[in-house]
Amino acid sequence: MNKLKKKPLFNPEGDTDVRLRRMINGNTTNLNDFNNMRYPWVSDWYRQAMNNFWIPEEINLSADVKDYPRLLPAERTAYDKILSFLVFLDSIQTANLPHIGEYVTANEVNLCLSIQTFQECVHSQSYSYMLDTICSPTQRNAILYQWKDDEHLLRRNTFIGNCYNEFQEHKDPVTLLKVMMANFILEGIYFYSGFMFFYNLSRNGKMPGSAQEIRYINRDENTHLWLFRNIILELQKEEPQLFTLETITELKEMLLEGVRQEIDWGHYCIGNNIPGLTRDMVSDYIHYLGNLRWTSLGYEPLYPEHTAEPESMAWVSQYSNANMVKTDFFEAKSTAYAKSTALVDDL
Ligand code: ZN
Ligand code: ZN
Image (tube, rainbow, N blue to C red; front, side, top):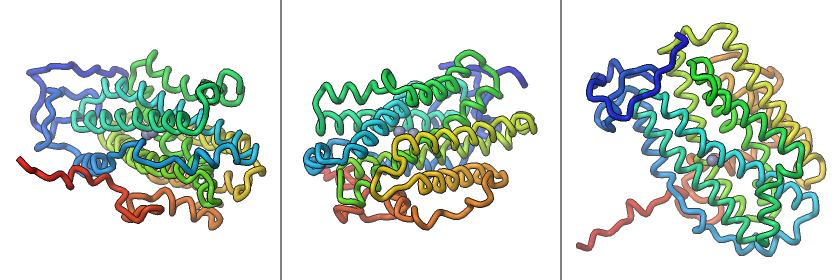
């Protein structure tokens, strides 16, 4: 139970029978076999992730170039801080996911983790594109490395980095489960006061291109959340001995702490200084998300008074549920990247 096997790169003696495939500690051949999948949700996930392909530079930021210098000082400070945190999140995801993948012995799930890693690269690059377009190289660097001057941001990044580093040092199944939970929290909680800030600017007629970039990112993050939720649910079935009361309590504490930090961060960056948002809107929404995440793993709500989506925040899901909205919010065209299906074979 305390051992965790690193998967071999080539293993001719591995199991080819899907019934023997396991999320961790399996005997994988490592062959990418798309015809034999153990987990039925993987093909849907894979298709969705492929359909979500997008290119940051295809979004027009010319309105944002004009808007950025005209933002209220509080809006610009929040914009910079939030972007700095998002860059960190996508960067650490890019670095951490391949490391997790080394211990996942269901090859089809590794395919998903590789696509996710690629998408996190695209997200990091989209922030660079936004910053290169709207501000000077000096401003850009100050925003990218804001944790050097901002203690709150440094504290948050350190907390998240430490959760991930722990698995670098302790290679056991429970620590892997915890780093997976840390991923689930990152994807399902940490992005959200940032996302709501960008959507709020957009509904106030500001920085529409930035909001559009964020919508594409948000759509990807929804699939990442879906991926980690499913990995954890499969582990509940395959490795029930990992889910002791003690470990479940630890996972719950992690989520409670994540919610607390996200609310603190939202209050720090947004507070009551941004037209259209309040401290209460931030806390109500993040508490609601905390419930949604924990109940989606099969547990009881963490905050019984926040089980319904706050009415004041209904506009956030209008922006973020891009997979359900087939028409683009701004340009009235499909949000799914359609080039692959539009390819004309003229050979
Ligand atoms: Zn991302
Ligand atoms: Zn992600």
